[in-house]
Image (cartoon, rainbow, N blue to C red; front, top):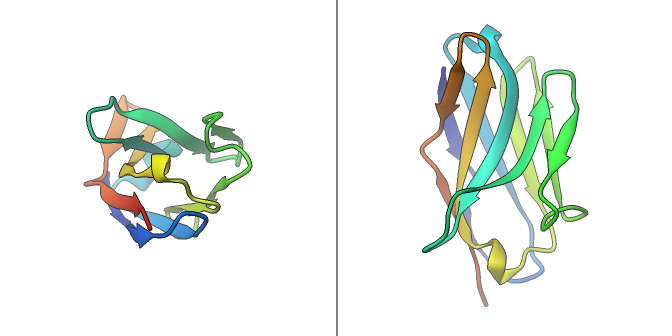
Length: 115
């Protein structure tokens, strides 16, 4: 499974961005898709995940501000990010997990929140 992420960029504090991640290849193996992020000098951390059935999970730091959604027909997952804060600045990575030990990562997209 290959993952192509897009949608990062520079935004002011309080602004919004939407990230997209399109999966290709053996997408029938996917069961969970998600977003992780890695800030400068920090470890990669979970942002949000969504199952093929639509169950979601969020990091406490983004609850109420970020929304993950999934279009199974398009094999695409989205991350709507609102009320962005400087501490949300990071490289955001898309992830897909599933059957036969599937654990694929996208190339990362940079989100910078700064005035």
